[in-house]
Image (cartoon, rainbow over all chains, first blue to last red; front, top):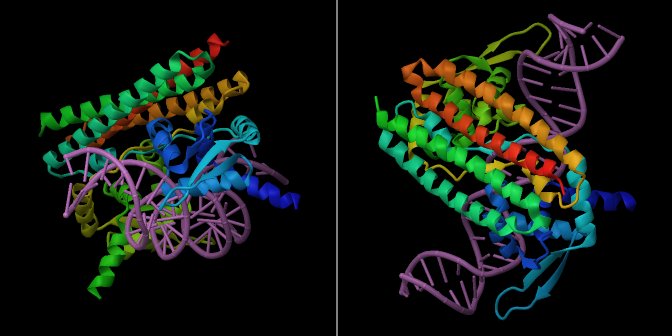
Length: 190
Length: 190
DNA sequence: GCCAGCATGTAAGGAGTTACATGATTAT
DNA sequence: ATAATCATGTAACTCCTTACATGCTGGC
């Protein structure tokens, strides 16, 4: 019996689940949909947000573990809206998990760099298009992150979350510099 | 019949498969084991290398698609060593795939940042330990990448691959700057 | 003697995606 | 009108990891 409960809890304690729970720890009561949108604009710039189907599954699993509670809000014609919020057990679990699991190494999947890497004799114009799109996305990410750290910066209780936003911005500024280096190389041509 | 062949080929055309094939495109005839080690120190710094079980599976799938050929080298007592090399069809596929699939957005999983983000009231000493470990790993990555661009830099035919290494280095330098920012914040304490 | 690295592979399961499904509202 | 966004959910599948399994070689 106790064994089974432990199993349920352990299943919820993956980095992705903890990241979502960490967003809920800001205190809001949100739907899976809202949680995903919010997560994309904050955590999503340094920890990939899964597809919505995965988010809903994680929320159900977090609830089964007792880390969140949900409340059904009936809607007309549509499926019910389900609002989730973090529990005390959830906050507790967050702290314990965070301190006792040493972080895994950085995982990066840079699809745009992969195109440049594979391009032994691809049309430079196609490549330049890919790089310019990537630069746009990076600039958008930087804008989000700068808003984030401005919002969080004032509040001393969220100094660590503000530091994360600034850290992420440093990474994306590095990415931007790299993109521009690559674009310059393409301009220099053959 | 033709339909089935297309299916086999399509199955091999995932970004991960193409990344591995891209490493093989350097021309070496290598075992799955060697490929994985090499990939980790180069591509691995900007595109996560999967577990060895996955690498072996990808190589078999690439071979089924005709993008690689393998040669068994019998070993005494051990299982045979299987050496893979890229085919002309493989090089062709690489170019076509690379140019026609627009790259997906950057996917980042920064586990160390996640710990800082979750830490509302975690012991700063534990956190500092995590950050210092991460700094070590980042410095090691930078060393690999600087070696890479030095090696590739001379060869004009590999300008693009050298640019990728420099680009990746920019990202990791950003990460390093962010790590130091976060460490400074922890020192300033409460 | 023991552990790490070399070298491959299987088995089981978790993490994640895409596509399908529904239906309202809001903007172009 | 048509598309996008809101809002949730299921089904099917792929990707990827961890653990198990084997056995040799080289360093401490």
